[in-house]
Image (cartoon, rainbow, N blue to C red; front, side, top):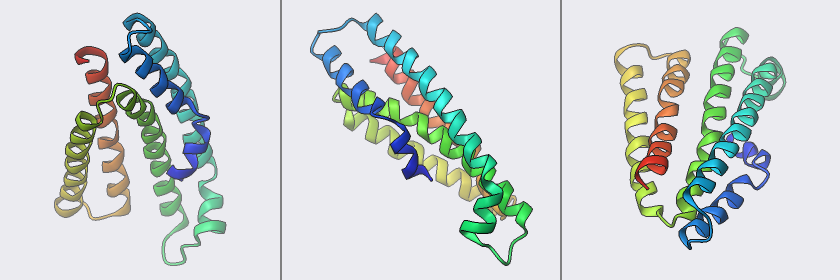
Length: 162
């Protein structure tokens, strides 16, 4: 699902990376970049909501026709797919921030931050599964809870530190 969302990106990420590179070269101002980032965030937010709603609406069909889980209850699989839709939608929005760091030529900073946040995210999910509830609902709910952290960190770094 997450790979297919890259098609919906429609080149927004690479275009934003190019604009960030132009900013690094001194062609555009910081205010122009902040305005562009805000505009792209709005577009990506709308696309994220549409992606999440599409997966959520198709969760019944995905369960019965595509995945075909025979041993799990249909309602359980549909609920898990709905939570996965929210996680995929949140991950989709991370792409613009990743593109910004690539355009700023700060891949090392992004990769270090991303590695730390992914490690913390998975440790948190593992902790919830190990100590609280080893269920598929807990897995996706924990993934949903930790999903916005990397976007928030990268956005903060991009707007206030860079």
